Length: 226
Image 1 (cartoon, helix red, strand yellow):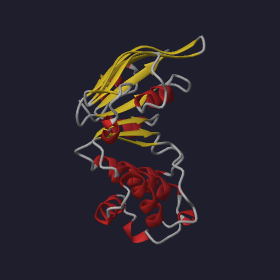
Image 2 (cartoon, helix red, strand yellow; image 1 turned 120 degrees about the vertical axis):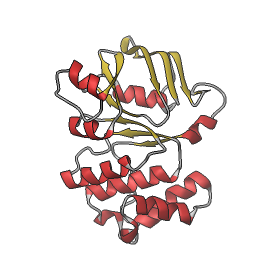
Image 3 (cartoon, one colour; image 1 turned 90 degrees about the vertical axis):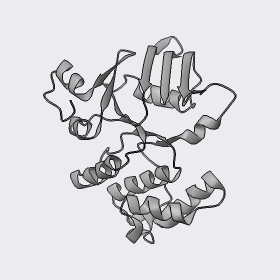
């Protein structure tokens, strides 16, 4: 699904990513973990084709991100840490706007399915400015799910959300059995409860572990995944 080979990224003379090799298989849920400044955003932006690749390659479902073919973009959907929504529009109107941007014509069946999956269908006529932060993040997730992509890239999907809001987001993500997910996170509890693997980025290099291996290697205690 995602295959990164010998990826190098730098800004000027500063090396940010050095010889990154990472494979994420179909239906894996992999946490991208690293200290602030480790290069997580650089890696995500490289995956999305937002940064030109200095050296190496990234393949999404076998298609080169830096190549001429751009059909890989339909296979991947991205939820940034701060999704820019329109506060004066209702939840449904926000969905319609972004759905039309994706498809040209919104599919109401898919919109209802996406909003229902994040428990916002009953609040669809409420203006986004009246949503809680957790509701806004769930609306952003619904817009991401509407794209019906096989791969989801989520950047700190529960950042700044209260415990109840975090649980609501995690419950939605746990229900996505047919997706491959890479999520940036620093919450060990959600990594334990949600993820199958961890990609640990440190000093420009990356190591992939099962969750249990990561917890043991980093001396962080047990895990729910063996």
